[in-house]
Image 1 (cartoon, rainbow, N blue to C red):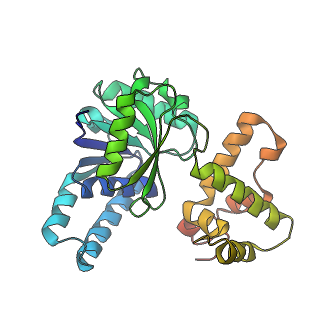
Image 2: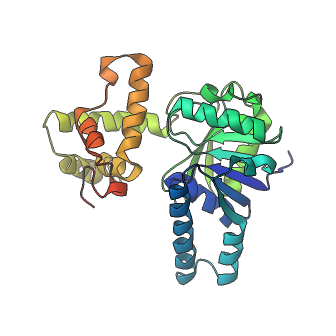
Length: 285
């Protein structure tokens, strides 16, 4: 199979989006990061302006290479800049209707052979693929946070993507110096987050029942099971709004009372205590 990906569009300039954008540019791809929010775009550009000099100062990049990376990376609020890209990575919020709208818009803009990947951490691509006329070119490409550091990427094939789409996505992961895992069948949450969700559910239940505090629960998992970061620290890192949104999407889809979000998680969400990005979640930062 010939690998023809040269230009990439990342949709969404949030934490995952701007890190994936930098990752692509670092590894030689012309990259454009698109977002409707000028504020998010400004934050993303500020991250790049800080990150690249830091890499130079640490001896990880030379000045010339850092400038080449910066030159390969563009930011825009105009989705039409995706017209000539070979590969799209969507990193929007975990809501099916939002993703479907983005994919439908991209389908009308992008060239017919461009591959569309969703970085959703939970939603299978079959729920958005039929918003396009290229279901065979739509798949999941799930990076982990922080995307510039974490090695694993889950590539989920399922019933609709072609073998070529899956292999191109796997090869792109390798060229981004990641370790891809191919899932032949679709399942919500994929591998890592299905297992992590069960851990988080139990941890939240223990805290809700007053069995132990979030700090003590984290300590147990870190110092007995060898987790590098307990579930509450990890939820703070990824964002409690993400945890809440995924849980609510699941509850709304099933209607099962057991799938309702944890009272403690709801409390944090309604207070706007969303973890590291707001300075407070289960921990103070």
